[in-house]
Length: 227
Image (cartoon, rainbow, N blue to C red; front, side, top):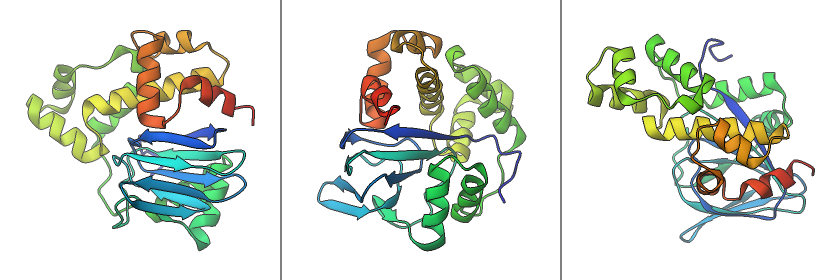
């Protein structure tokens, strides 16, 4: 089982559309079709299957089967395979992934444990920073505070943060704010309210970041909640 004290979160996003436009996932994610296989495409590369593990940081489009798919984002998990775009999960990993996509916490933890590259647990100062950003994404912690919390020079602190989380400090803050906004909208909040509560300048700002990371608009994501 993974370290129960790990600061990193998992988040689920239901997708009701048949296609996700070109985007790059900020973290490793699991993509599972609801009624059939999915297809990832990027510059001539193609990966197709019922349950896929997708490499972060690679711009790609996704074609989905009828009724869409579910996506599980695994913050802080390095992509464990030597594949440029993604891999098809099978066997025990596929079964765990399917249960995780349905919201089973134990299955999600076990899946993370099996996919985890053996790395040291985050140092407590970084774990504390990660938890603080999750807890108050609208406050947008600045680089000076990060350096102070880690007792490092600013550039060293930024490098240390990225090496530990897999994301730059700026990207992690944006991603955590986006997760917060998505949770607010899933709970019934208006897009405008969710944007402001998460620290985005306005609805247009949230929509741009949402599309960049998810490949669909907030309104399309909200529509997917009812499927």
